[in-house]
Amino acid sequence: MSINTEREIEANLQIGPTDQGMVRIFIESQGIEVPMDFEPEEAEEIAEEIRAAAAQARAVTEGGGKRR
Image (cartoon, rainbow, N blue to C red; front, side):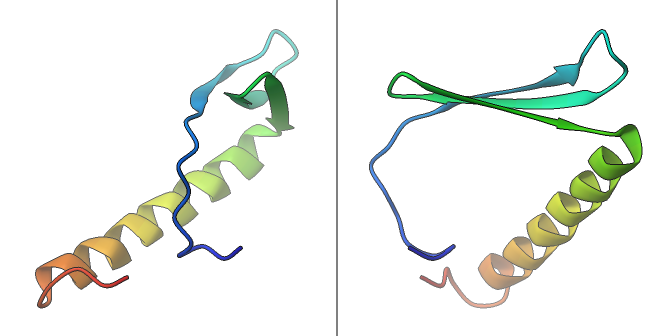
């Protein structure tokens, strides 16, 4: 499986602070729960990567159509 492989799987995503000062990304799908805790600095790096990916995706769709 790669980043471009589409799947028919639904998942719930929650993001928020924990009472321990961490940032938790919590994914739940088909009875499986995946809690991932990050230091605030790590969470900011992830947020930057998401913003960069969004900009790249926007450039693909604005630059002549959607790639698959």
